[in-house]
Image (cartoon, rainbow, N blue to C red; front, side, top):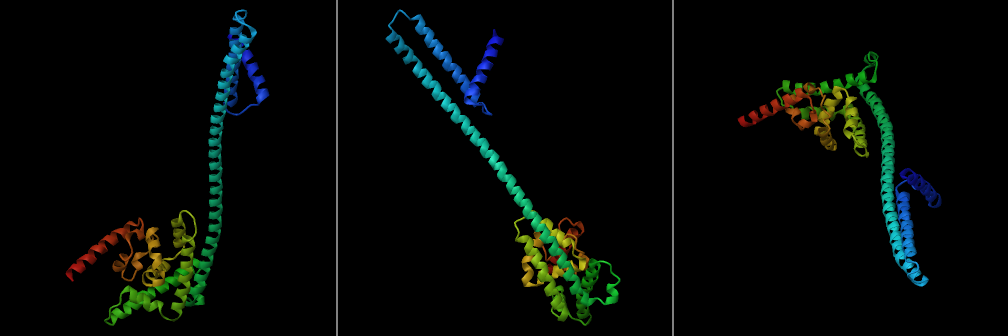
Length: 311
């Protein structure tokens, strides 16, 4: 009996769907159940009226049938409307979720496209910067020496190491004649004269442009791109960068960026003119996870404090 009822129920449901159409949620099934309740209500009232037939007139029978059935059907219709509204709200929420996912996907695509454009320009700028650096530094290298080097990096390494050593020589000269010369005076002595002044101005102007290019773009992981830029610098360049950012007012704004992203983590700090005094002029964060520099940094701070107490 149950199987027979189930069979007819399935057939009735299919017939119902053929009339109102199918949905992908529970709306159709809920409305079908209300339809079943309505049919049951009709038959129930009808059978009650049949059993009362003969006990009342046709007018009374019709009034009873209509009076009882109409409120039931109206209530069922109202419930069907409520179910439809609730399910439509659910569909609307699902649509909003899908729309949000689509919007997020579009934003991800936009971010990816923006990053690709940025990286394409960024690496071209680095390439141009390296070419410019080589052309500038060549004035300190004779042609025979240039022929000994294979790559542009080798030329830059030799040239800027020469300039770094000039700072040391400048300071050493004044110390030998009995004068005092700190790293600032030594760097300014080198950077304010003739061809070196022109070279460093052009070099740092282009380097600052690269720093600003990274900072002014709406990209994530700015620190990563700053580190890529610094990883292409020779140690001589980093030493000159160290002093230029400290002592040139036009580049002081780069100092917080150096400290924020630990861009001097791999600097050859022993090449600094006044290594112990100079190293503490940057916040310790500038040296990242370089254990050797951190230990030296703490040691230098103690020495400076002890010296100040004696004074």
